[in-house]
Length: 375
Image 1 (tube, rainbow, N blue to C red):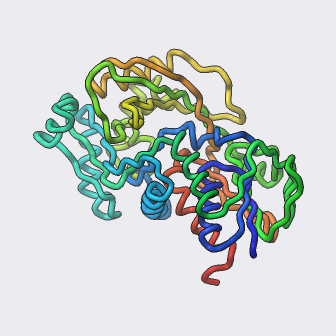
Image 2 (cartoon, rainbow, N blue to C red):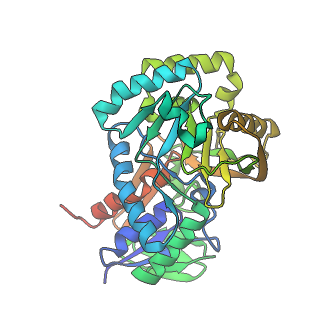
Image 3 (tube, rainbow, N blue to C red):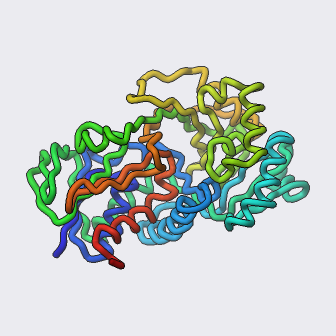
């Protein structure tokens, strides 16, 4: 039986494990911690189609959507398929959303709808009527990452025969051989999905990518008002960060307006994301701080700005329950890298924060290529 060894139990590692196991390979996954604790469980759980740029990333997100649906059904974790709401808070943001819907959305097949007037006012009993419009992204999904990934691990182990080695450090990899604290293993294929760790394994080929890390400040809060939120929330601020809106004149106008009137948001890379948990709480963020390493120090002012944005958008006060950092690999030449180090030895790295959105289909494609399907 052909074997595959995978380093890392984040979303890319687990996606590769699923793609390989469903093809009948014997799969082992190695993770240094006792449970996944990296970017894939610290994030918002937003599997967004709407925000992806046209072309490859959009297609990967669409294909990943179906895989998430299969996983949720088989592994038994919560998956919200109610879409996302991106609110236009002022005229510039409304003009951007209108231009997007009338142009690129139609041309590229984004499954979106612009809500205004009564349609906007009917949302959540009028809770969001202080906004000018809302872009409803019908294909966007939500999972609660800190529960979904462990459930996926259990499904892969129980139903697909994937063998997991947690609390296991992989010290070195070479073609056909992996050296770890649990021993040495051999296989025809080894895939390194090491997130933002660019030094433990394959340091030289990773260094050639000149990668960075992105540090995010994030919060979990409970509304101090009645809100049973069932959709991800974004605002026009997200349009200047997401590739779906890149290159539009209206996006450039909004970016210039933010830089002039809210330079702190631009400097800290702040745009509002809100994700509901299954327990009536909200995950709120985020900021973006890029560098070679992630500083351990959070700025309270950044949290205050994000809370203010969230309270203004939701129209009510929030009680913060928890704060943490998200860290992910960032700013490569491409959104991701699929490196062929040597025959039978490869790596898969994300350079953006959209691994949940595109990772499942990206791994499916990569495993097919590694196994020579279609060649």
